[in-house]
Amino acid sequence: MRTILATDFSPCSRAATRHAAQVASLWRDSLLLVHVVHTPPAGSAHMRVALAPTQTELMRQAERDIALEIAELSHTGVEAGSLILVGPPGPSIVDVARRDPTRMVVMGTHGRRGASHLLFGSVAEQVAETAPCPVMVVPEVQAPGTALRTEGPSRVVASVDPGRGGDAVLDWLASLRQMVPSDVTFVRGYAPDDEGARYGIAERWLASEGHPALVALLERDLRARIGELSGRGATSCQFFAHHRGAPDPLIGATQLLAPDLLVVAQRSQGRGSWAASSLREARVPVVIVPMNAAQPRRAHIPETRSLLIATDLSDLANAAIPRAYSVLRRGGVIDLCHVHESGPGSARMADESGEPPLDAEARDEVEQRLRQLVPAQAEALGINTRIWVVEARGAAEAIVQTAERLGVDMIALATHGRTGLPRVLLGSVAETVVRTSGKPVLVIRLDVG
Image 1 (spheres, one colour):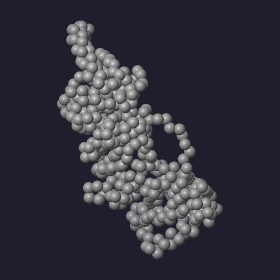
Image 2 (tube, helix red, strand yellow):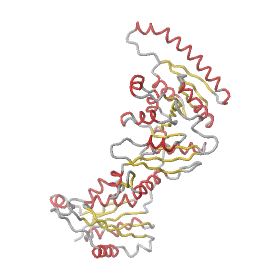
Image 3 (spheres, rainbow, N blue to C red):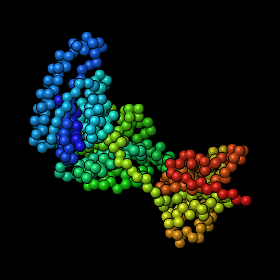
Image 4 (cartoon, rainbow, N blue to C red):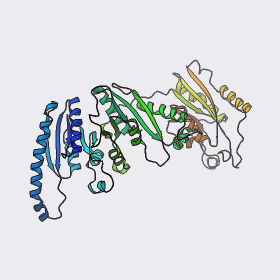
């Protein structure tokens, strides 16, 4: 395996050299120094001939410069080689990384902004967006030393999304922590209005931050996503509230936490300017991990240990409850839930008044009716039942929000299976739950005569 150091002999490339040497040394890789002689595209054969002497001089100078860099690396004990190419720098570097197994590409960036960035572009961004392996981009302006500490754990900030990109980041962090003790802080920016709506939390803001109850749910789900991160070091989570439509506060969080390294997933150019913001704003080395770096995961059979059963207390819905309990015959937690649709615009009411809220006596009565629906075998099977009476304007939305808030594995509910005019008049809570829930939904169809 090898590590590639892409260099243009500038000060920012020299800043990346010590990082590349450390990566190669830690993983016992060879180090390949790659320099691309870039000549502007010529519009005619005559112009290409005129540029030939300049290109030859650039090649000779590159040979001298790269030889000096290899000589300076001799004290590291890393086996180093060199490769000089002619062409567009970004695609040329990516092509080299694709030819043979490459652990990482390390390169520097000027962090240009404004007119300078528009004029010169960013080779680092091009490589980070298309490389088949992780890319470490080292800013020219940074603290001395290297991102991976040899004494004490490295401080790492990472962003994990729900998809394969998040899997790739977690896999790379696990491999890093096998080699270097690393304390990882997982950072997530969130809009309290959006996340509060997902969990069905009314109090979403506390001053300028998200409400503690909301943050607790976000951390619960993020830690479930992370799982047990192997290797040496601690893990923690930090959440930063921002208004809907505002930029993700990852860079601001990085500046606040002052880590040694920032780790993010590679995204395509069509999904936004994450590379521009991360690579131009970060003042620490950034590792961009491609989605294909995720280790293949064998399919496993998940065990359902918690289930939300929703009932409107009709005969049909109540008849489905024992069937739903059978999913947890090996024990677990059942959240037996009834949604009381009340308030203006409630889904069950044709007028604007809606049903009135439940008073304490009416709520106690509903809870008692729910307890009577718990099958007699439940306790013997190790099933613990919790009773919930939720007041909301719409049953389907409340069921989905309650399931997210409680963090259940699955939702179960009955359906009338109506078609035609009855369905148009009465709607289908089950259909809406299936369409909008991010959790598996067990729809039980029973006919009650």
